[in-house]
Length: 203
Image (cartoon, rainbow, N blue to C red; front, top):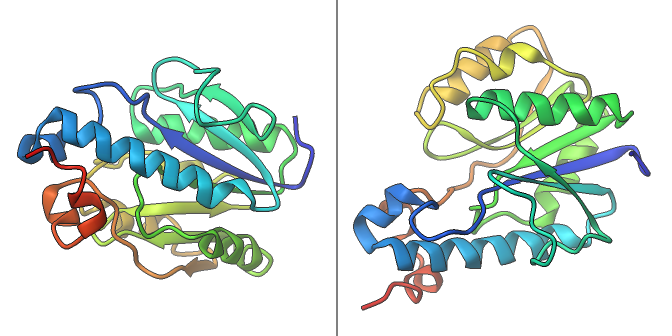
């Protein structure tokens, strides 16, 4: 249930060998991909922990109780839906039904995410209906709303470069604020210039 008015939702995959960062794993192997994903999870948790809002973590397969997400800070849920759009739709719907006024979702694979991006989102939702954090691959790394725009979550080919363009078309009559563009880590090309992440590649 809502304690505050603002909620940040983090979507995460359970960190299991062979089930995370599969496109990245094709280049560097499953073990290195898992190590990078665990690093990014920890980085995301540290980035979000001290932001002044309620927080919810949504797992892909089963809810974990003794992990990096402290249950005194994070509400814990299971993602529900047949594709990413429906899973996000259900998470936003759940948040608004629990009386949150501003709801923001982020992924857990952003090396460049900073707490300022979340704070800027909540601030800009005062004067805009939707905030989008554009990703360099044509998708988005963050989505913030004050009410549910169901169409945003439907009829998309998730994981492709068309997602953001189609989302903007859905919202063409709404006031949308765009954050700075960031790079999410999906393939080796996304991290090839990142010395921190390259340390996790097993030689």
